Image (tube, rainbow, N blue to C red; front, side, top):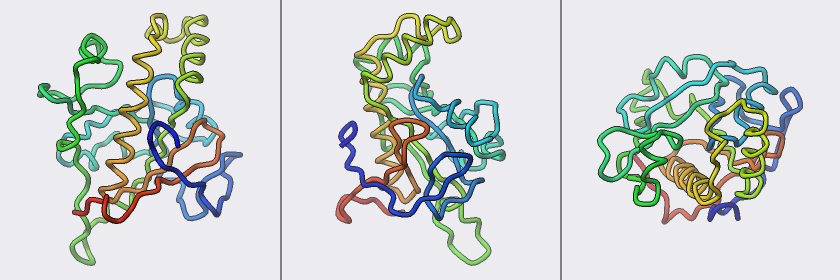
Length: 208
């Protein structure tokens, strides 16, 4: 179990530039996300994906049509809805960092593409596959502190283990929510680690 997620290894794998992926996954489906320092850029670089970071607000209707997703594989930062906040926040936004203890994720405002209604409809749900990088808290703290020594990411200079744990927990909740809403989600502890699928009982899933 990783951050309260029940996971199982993917049974059939192939490799893309040394990265193990699900046998059935297509290269241009991949969207990579995770908290700061989780290895998103390393993952994209190894795959040979689009080098520039993207951003999607998961509370925004039609985010699946965003131009940031037109070039894939791609690393994206997620804008997430929180109770009492009108605007979605990234988990390194100054507002979230200032109020992270009291801000609660508003899962009811996280949207997913509609299901394809007829033969000519765009099947947005199958167009994207989310790869969530969710390492252990200790690993992520160590990685952020190492980056701080290099001075490449100013946000790492004041890394707080409690903040890191909250970021990891929120990303795990988002991964589970997207999975339950019918999106394809994989979870990894590191860029080169094998992917895992979330184990969920039918009664817990949300459809629509």
